[in-house]
Image: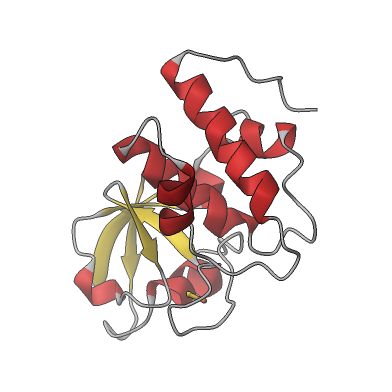
Length: 159
Ligand code: FES
């Protein structure tokens, strides 16, 4: 059994400890906002927050997470009012949307560590794959979210 917290709720997973976190979240907890893209740690679609760090959930086993705090896209703000979600909406980042939860979670972790990231730092932290090519608007959104987090700008409320 693997015990850790997901979105502020204690969880017990009666699965093989080698099970990737991605599948426990999606198949047991029904947290399907975390996406399966490649399963090899390259695309970033499965990114969640573990103890304040962006983690690719296809690459971490549930047995290694005892006592940790995991946050998924569902754990941010269901009304999309989290500053990163609001910035993604304001910058109109989303096209097909499949990769967006991973980008949002990676942005949350980045801004926790760096409140004023450069374009190069954003590109390095968000080196995920997006087939729609949202990258220019993504940079804009991260900058907007960072400015809002610093108190230098105000984001429009979500529609
Ligand atoms: Fe985990 Fe692609 S599904 S990195």
